[in-house]
Image 1 (cartoon, one colour):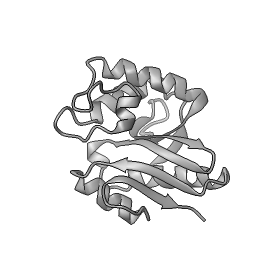
Image 2 (spheres, rainbow, N blue to C red):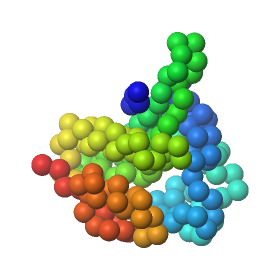
Image 3 (cartoon, helix red, strand yellow):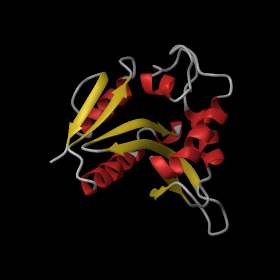
Length: 165
């Protein structure tokens, strides 16, 4: 069973950054977004910075107070730490929210983990009276485009939006 939690406790910024780094495709395998450049994850929009894990850990430490970070996880035993299966990083600013990243473990990419993370974020946005959720999807990532469409997101690649009522 997959659970959704927010950052904190067993989900330290360093632990989440390690997951992010391990499950984010490397140079040439992924469209680096404007948000990645703005966050300092890429200098030129073509390659990741060499210290990507530290940059993401710093971003997640700051996110404790400024962003929404949701974690999909499984617990296999009472004594074990929960196993991270996915992360959503987003922000809610006024009437619109922005999904900055959704990273899902490769083994769970067809199991609905991204959908559960997105829907949990969507509910938070509705609670905050947002009118829409904006994101950016690589034009080369057919799986992400198909997933986004199944979640009710309009647009095919590039900037996408889901209107909330």
